[in-house]
Structure formats: C-alpha cells, structure tokens
Length: 248
Image (cartoon, rainbow, N blue to C red; front, side):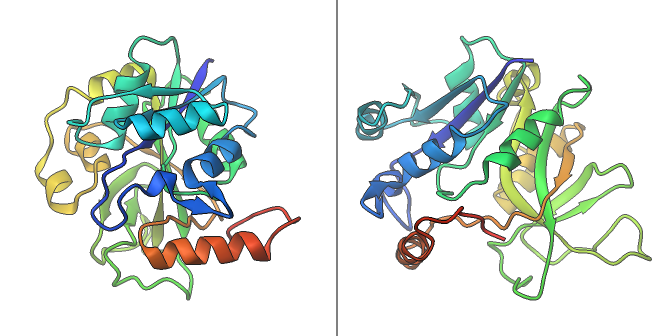
C-alpha cells in the first residue's frame, strides 16, 4: 500500500497572511510541519502543495519537495488531489499546513485505517475535556454511528454520541486520509449546502453519501491562525527544547 502525505500551504490567509513562512524558533512553520511528518513510518512520499512561489522556494531550500497548484482551488483536499493526480498512490493523507506540532504517530495510524481496502475517507477525533469551549465555532464537533462512521460535523453545538447512555462530545482533528481513487472523485463532486454553510469540506463527502471513518486519538491539535497563536507556538517550542513535543 503506497501512501503519500500532502501538506497544502496557501500564502493568502485573512487572519494571518503568509503564515506558512512565519517563523517559529527562527524556522518557517512549513518546515516544522515537514520535519514532523518526515518522521512517519507509513508515508512513502511527502510533498507540499502550494499556490505560491515563495513557499515553493522555501520548501526546496530546506530540502523538501513541493509542487505548484492553482490558486483557484476550493479546499485543501482539492489542492492535495491536484498535487498527486499524476502520482502513483493507494492512500493520500492531507496534513494541515498550520499545525507545526503534528504528531507523526497520528499520521501513521490514519494510514493504517485503509489497510482493509474498504475505507474511502478517514479523519481523527478526540473526546472533549474541561478545557474545550464547545460554544467556540472554531472547535468542530462530530457525531458518529455505532461503527465509528461520522454522521455530521458542525461548528455549532450538536448531540453527542451514537449511544445516548454513553455521553460524549467528539472534537474533530483536522487531518484527512483518502483512498487515491476517492480523492480524485471527491474533487469532482459539487460543493454541498452544509459544506458551504459550515465551511467544512468533509460535509461534501457525507452529503454525497460517502462514509468517513473516525480514528479516536488523545492528540490535541494546535493550529496557528492568529498572531497570538504564533506567539504561543514560539513559547511552546522554547519551553520544550530538548523534549519530545506532544500536544495532549
């Protein structure tokens, strides 16, 4: 089973323009993500998919592999599909381009979700805890069925578990895996009402009738979306120098 990891990286960002190139401990954020993902055992290849020559040049400068994609693409998954369309792969993992502390084991575990040959799409979730503000629209909530297939993703508060006797609130971790065939199909699907309303691309798959398998993890994602996040990321690196970085 050949697996390719793709890190979509756009220069344009309303809240934090050029964020893939912003420095965390004197190193561009995209390089942190590349180096973390490079530790994976289950990825046969890793590339950055970008619409900007400055990001492309920086990635190649630090020894990574990058491909240029259109700036008109609708989502990170569309960008990943564009990047690998001429490559040979069974599984494609879409690794978020704003998570400098991504856990390599999480990526490896997501690849393994496709070992049975039946899964077409998978993503990760964790149980909420007392530190989560479930009213925050930036925290995406998930419901599932008894087989750990996603039923819905929402920025709003939603009902909890498949079994009402076991109360749970699942929080989405923004990493996606696709079978290569499905990813090529996904990019051709029309955007759907809930995808556009919620601004969540995974709803496109659900609304078109495809199943998304859920991988439960204890990993707490940390994405850099604002100047405050960037300061926190730098503080975190400085505090953890010489230690294994785990965001739990």
